[in-house]
Length: 441
Image 1 (cartoon, helix red, strand yellow):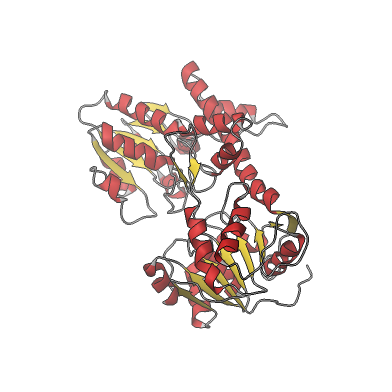
Image 2: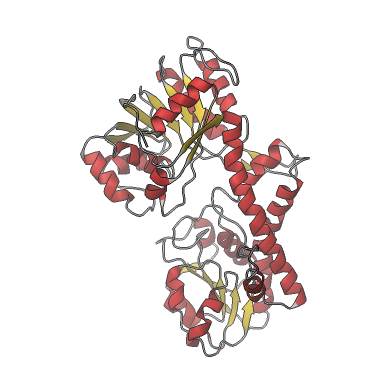
């Protein structure tokens, strides 16, 4: 791919979390000065010491390298730069007056207003945070209100503006951030054509995948569509799991057989859908077009119902034991990471800690301390070996690769509730598992 001459001397990344910090580091590794901004002083201090406050393979080594070379530093307040990349959270909030959650744009607005005082003619502002359609236009409006001395672009209109604004959603997988930031294609949506080309020149600095230009609204909806598509497909698998439980059919065997059709590829079910994208982004579409997004809304409800269903299955199983010890394997929202955000496993454990009155053991090999809310409810963090030795009921909530070492003998005499299809993978090495129960995703 042909690269353009570097047009940016300093780039600022607002938000040093799971997206912002890897992005800032990869750009700095290309020899560009990067200033990272975060309101959390501990995160800023960690970066300036060459350390990281998140878990991402290879990131700390690269952060240490670029900080030592003087190409990356962190601050708590924005400084002047040639380009600003906003990568802050966009959660949703429960709204009692609405059947669907409401997107919370307060972090984006705060980040936008924080950079307004240091903007100058010729600057570029890029929003990467996953956002409802129209958010980039709102960002432009907030900047226009804050800086009446500068001109800003208008969606769909030609003409020069002092500041370029574009939307470019992140599309990386936790655990592979450094690789995918460079290799993945990027969708770039400018508020105007000139804005798109300005943003394109920035991403050409470090992206080796294709950079595809569109308008801001289409770029916003593209990210939401990607995750809504996955959510709907997971919901189909989860709904089949509900049906299989009702009809007494092994869902894992069913999916294995159905997927032998050359044009069928059913995803695996689970205890729900977690993470900061798939469990959140579809609601942004629903909030924008609630009457049209009926399938997407239904899929969200199916997936959101899974944690309570799994917890109920555990509670029913506990009635067959006197003062049972329950071991929950995994708390993260996906295998082999430490990220507990929007984790259905956490929802299951929270509900059990509030309702069951039994001794609860949590096995999460990627964290050292339990979240305060479940720790205060009597949940104990233990090793896999201790949990399997003590438990009467074993609940598989995450299929971490470290759980693949389980020997079937460690499960003999126990009730096993498997939401991840882990036991079928262990079946070759298992001679017998008593009281085997499968609660599919």
